[in-house]
View 1 (cartoon, one colour):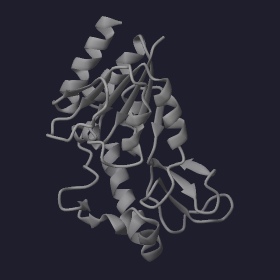
View 2 (cartoon, one colour):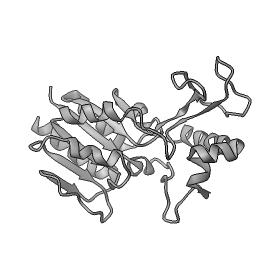
View 3 (tube, rainbow, N blue to C red):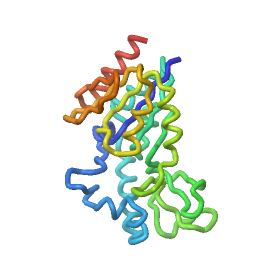
Length: 228
């Protein structure tokens, strides 16, 4: 069975009502990125960070997967599909995808501040009184700016094995995720789906579908399933 690897970004979840991570003014939901998505912001104002992610969590619970998410799940009928996402939502899983790598963490989880292996499912509000089993404060299970991306090596390994590579809803400017396309094999087909006028990297066999995620993904999935 051929292997498809899909790199997704904020554009695929935007059509489900999830806020784009970085707006044109450099803010995220009217907050400076440095205040809510960095270790320094956590140290300065823990309550602000916890409240910010509590609000994002509540928003997510009211959002539903869109046709792009469900179309990718349909690919599993004929392909081995791995989703590598920069998004922290669970819409790929709810859309039916069975193999999802969350490079930047997961909004509906929390982890210990003293032992990163202690990760918990978390859908309720998080407070500065919530502790792990070792008695340390819990924090959002999110990879913040300045932190390592622990699942990057796994993602690179999957990309190297891919027979088809797709990029949906990300302009390939946020690293290290943007560099994944450089690990694809020369000869495999590669597709970039984005409605914006973006700079297309000089990658062999890369085709650009200038459509929003729901439209472009459905078209490409239908093509791949028909050609398989």
